Amino acid sequence: MEADSVSIWPRMEPFLLGALQVAPSSKLSLHYLRKMAIYVRTRDGCFPILGWPMWRHIACGKLQLPEDHAWLYFETFDLLNGHTPEERLEWAECLSQCSSKGELDQQRNKLSVDTLQFLLFLYIQQLNRASLRTSLIGEEWPSHRTRFCLVPQNWDDQAHLSFVQSHLAEILELLVEPGQLSQSGQALRDCQISLEAVRSLGLLLEGSVCHGRAVQPVHRLLTKGPLQTQAGYSPLSHSFPLHQLLSCLHQSLTLNPFGITACLCSGKKLAWAQQVEGSMKRAKIARNTHTAPPGSKIVLMSQVFKQTLAKTSDKLTGANIKIHRCSDAFIYLLSPLRSVSVDKCRDCTVVLGPVETSVHIHSCQNLRVVCVAGRIAVGVSSRCTIHALTPTRPLLLPGNADITLGPFHTVYPSLEDHMASVGLAVVPNAWDRPLLLGNEGLFHALVVPFQTEGDTCEVPGGLPPPYQAALDEKQRRIQNWQETVMEARLNKEQKRQFQELVEVKFHEWLLETGHRQELDSLIPPAMASLRDSSGPAAAETPRVPDAKPTGNGRAVRQSPMAC
Image (cartoon, rainbow, N blue to C red; front, top):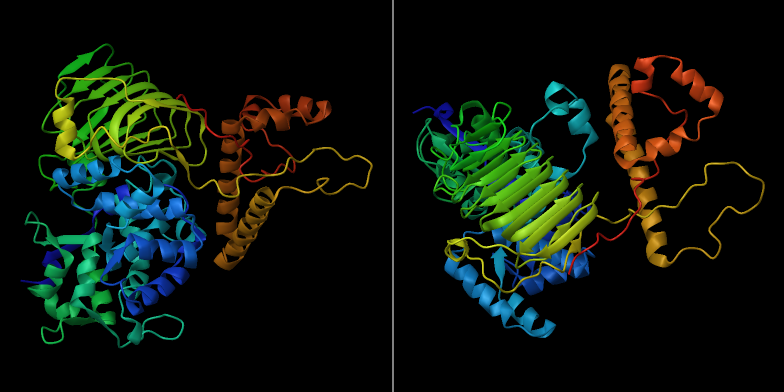
């Protein structure tokens, strides 16, 4: 059997459920993760299992992360693990009996994770980090697909493949033992990677021999059959030469055959138990649940318009649901679900059965969601109400306005059985204790847009330290962005395309935030008249001279919460 008959692909769930949909902290960059990889292998009690006390020490003491953020990463990784429903219910029972922070810490201290897999989990948080070189001058240079893509990064299996291909060498370096690293933490060319370390790659990669065969963990494919020689595996030393393993994986990597791309191309339609009002001509509803293994089951619903749809079925059980670009719709999915993403929907009500892992709401307006879920996350959304029962703190990501959190307030006959089947209990319930994430540096100074006489050039009395630190962080990010642009070394044509893209995004931002009207009101009447006389085409894309966004431009306020 030839080596090219073996396919290896990125698993969907780590990227879909594990990579938080927010730009990661700079403390999770490769530089710091290399230091952490050395630290955990040279300290007692950190390897091969990492407990919460040691991770808290590393995260808070070494990486300077807030403790609630450290717990967020630890807890999110644990959500990905294959705990049985009984184990999850037992854990919930233990947490519900904690009456103080000390008792809660005692329970958390019992939790541990696989050290190397947790390192890889922290690394893939880079999925949502903006990369000028990758996205602008590499394969992701703006094209029809990147501008009008149906799926965001966490759902996009092509983005997952591109990420792994681009970062595979760094991923493997994190698995190398400290004795085979240079002083800068980089792997030596002739170094070896142990079989145990390669097992941890099973978090990110899986594959099969020949099309249609059973899915296997990546280490099994590399130690048997046609890939054993190509990967350089030695049964005597139980290890792989790094450069040979890297080459083998690069040659074998392919698109996930159970990903969203395959589902869109060849997925089956889903019949509905209830379908009233309107027409389904616009709707695109597909699933791969008839072929995909557990963890890769997908149901996609897109462009449901003025419909009431209801479904309770084994075809939904354990599936990852994506609800996309629906409007004026009422959607009821009353089965135990693996995860749910609601993206770019408006004026909708979504009622869900218990969701084992996460419900993520992104770029939605005037949405109501009712759910029991392992986690709730909301980003770039406005006028949304979420009625939830969840054991973890709801995540409020950047870009939200008028978000209301309320208690779960509905029932259907099999609800409790469905909750038990995914390991979700009534307590603990943290629906009313949201956690703001990724809002560092959002504060910005208000700029008076007029030139007047006077000497004052600073805020009288200065700003409180946290707010000044936010401004300093914003300035640092601007400098980093400028350096990134310079280091990208774009040619003349790329600079032109890049400038066009930035301007398009800037004008979209002006419209979304309402700042267009503010800037237009600053244009002198003569210029405004001249602009208006240019005709309809000019009116559609007006240009504001010397207009530049200040940070993200949004007034920062804590989302309102109904208690």
